[in-house]
Length: 428
Image 1 (tube, helix red, strand yellow):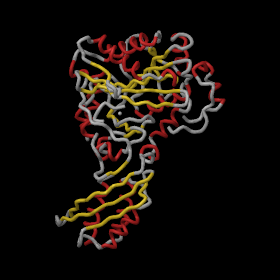
Image 2 (cartoon, helix red, strand yellow; image 1 turned 180 degrees about the vertical axis):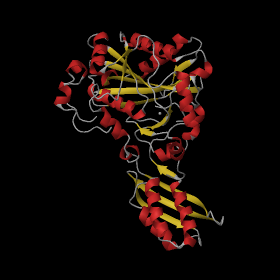
Image 3 (tube, rainbow, N blue to C red; image 1 turned 90 degrees about the horizontal axis):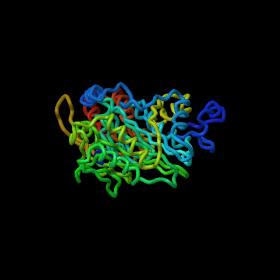
C-alpha cells in the first residue's frame, strides 16, 4: 500500500451477547487470544484541516448516516440488503492506530462470507510501514519525532506510505474466495472516470493506479487470512508532497536487511490535475461505483472506532499497534555497518568511528565501536559497546547509557564521548 516512493483483543461470550443487535455481522467462530494488533508538517495539518473542513471525520454528503454504537451498524446491515450484500463504512476518526485497529476488528469479527465491506478512512499526518519492513531504512524517525508525526506498522505487506488528511484510504473486505484486487481498483478508476471523463487513469500489473501514464496516485497492499481477506489502497487527493519527501528517507546509513524495501515512484495529487474536484464528489462517486460493481445497494454509514460499545476490544487493539514491540520489535533482523563522523564541540577537533551492530527483534544483539586513534581510550569505546549490547536500538536506551558513562568520566573526555554517543543516536 503506497502513495509515495515506495503506505483484537479476544472477545468473550459476554461481550458478544451485548452485541446481539448486530450478531448477524459476527463470525460464528470464536476469536481466541489477543490479536496484536518539522514544524512544516504541523502547519500542513492545520492547513489541511481548514481546507478540507474537518475537525475529525471525512466530509460526506447528506446520504451519510452517523452510527450510534452497534445499532448503527445493525441499521447499515438491514438497509444494505440480504445475504451477500455490502456495507459502506466511513470512519469518523483520523487517528492512524484507531483506523488500523478498526480494519483488524472488521477482519476478525464480521462474517465476510455473508457480507462484503468497504471502509473509507484517512489520518492526520503519519508514516505507515508494511508488516515486513524496517523503519530505520524507510523513514526519517528523527524528523518524525521532531514534528510529532507518528509511525505505524500495518498488518499487510507492501511499502511505506505517508498519510495526511489529503490522502484517502479504501479497504475492501471480502471472504477469501471473492478476493479480487482488479475489481476493487476498477471501482476507483471507474469512479474517477465518471467524475472526470478526461482523467487518464488506469491500474497497473503491480496494482497501482497511474495518472497520465506516469504519476502514481494510488498503491496497494493486502492481507489474506484463512477464510477472509482485505485489500487496501491509497488515493492521493491533496496530500502534502513536500512533507512526504521530508519523512520518507532513511534514518540509518549502512543498513543491511532482508526486509521488504519500498519501490520509488513519482507521485501526484488528483487536485493538482483537476482543481474542481472536491471530497463530497469523490466519496459519492466511489460509493456509487462500489454498489454498481458488486451489485449492492449500500448506504454510507459513519462509524467511530473509539466506540467500545460498537467495537468491543478495539481500544486494546489500537494500544497494541502503538507499542514499541509491534512498531520496532517486529522488524526483521538487520545489521548496521557505517562510519561515524565526530566533532568535539568545545575544540572543533574532528575524528571518526566505525559502528557495527546486529539487531534482532529491535534489540542490539551485538555492538562494536572502533574509534579513531587518539579520540578516546580504546577501553572506553569498548565499555560503551558492551553497555549498548543487549538494549533496544533506540535513542532512549543509548542516551541513558551515555548519561551514566558521562557522569563517571573526567571533564577532558566528556566532550568527545558525548560526540560519539550523539553520532550513534543519530542513526536511531
